Amino acid sequence: MPRVMNGCFFSFEGPEGAGKTTMISKLESLLRERGIDVVATREPGGVRIAEAIRSIILNCDYTEMDGRTEALLYAAARRQHLLEKIVPALEAGCVVLCDRFVDSSLAYQGFARGLGIEEVWKINEFAIDGYMPSLTIYFDIDPQIGLERIRRNRGREVNRLDLETLSFHEKVREGYRELARRFADRIVVIDANRPLDDVFAETTAAVLSRLKGR
Ligand code: TYD
Image (cartoon, rainbow, N blue to C red; front, side):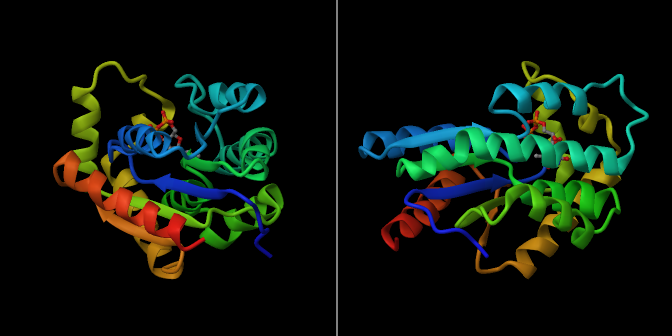
């Protein structure tokens, strides 16, 4: 059962290079300017223990990591981050903008790694214990374009998932599209292969309309 909270929980999803991080930071400023209390955060990480788990999961040296181990570590990091950061912010009435949440595990581990969406959902159900975003924005982009954007952005760290093949990233996209079909009430699909301003306008409209409808 989804839990009822004072604040509003938004998650942002997409393959590598979809522009989530830029959108979240612009949205955070816009909401602040309107006097709304906002907490922007990211997965995996966001709090001490989850950051420590992140450094294990994304370490490029750990090429032998098993897919289920990977899924369990993401779920463990999610649990800690949720309890320490997201839930207190929601209870305080804040709007939470979270860069990736459970759909990342369903698309990457469940679909692209082939562990199964239902299997990965089961361990995440245990981890999130009813806390789900009221709206998820999925930035859809051709992974080839997304990966190209990342290569041009040299400041960004290269992590273990970046080392995956293009066909893995294509599967991630397929996984997200499947989730968007299954959870059409929660997931809004935004075409991210457009100028930044257009993507931002659509993102803002979706978020503000959900906030108005509260
Ligand atoms: P990060 O550097 O935060 O990438 P991005 O800016 O694209 O969000 O790295 C997170 C990586 O972890 C990214 O490749 C997606 C992957 N991931 C999963 O595979 N499963 C998950 O549940 C989460 C949260 C992330």
